[in-house]
Length: 74
Picture 1 (tube, rainbow, N blue to C red):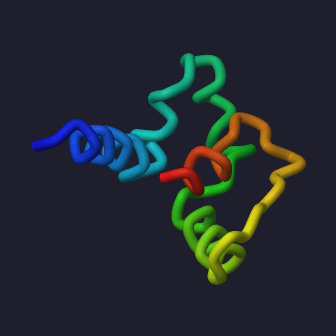
Picture 2: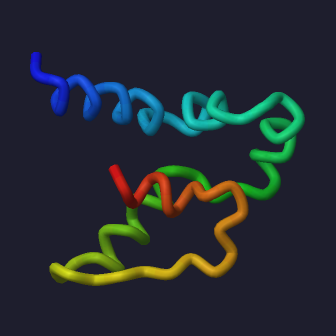
């Protein structure tokens, strides 16, 4: 496996579920996640909708912990 494939597999693991993604953050932040964070399946639908064309830039003004930005980059 080349390094690009290994990196992709590593990132895919973090975005495989909300619980896995939340593990990126300290416990205190994780406690807020269920109330304040958008579920990953919603993030993925929004990203697909907003980036349906090539060369599209999306600005997430309320980025919070960066879930949209991080998920969109994968």
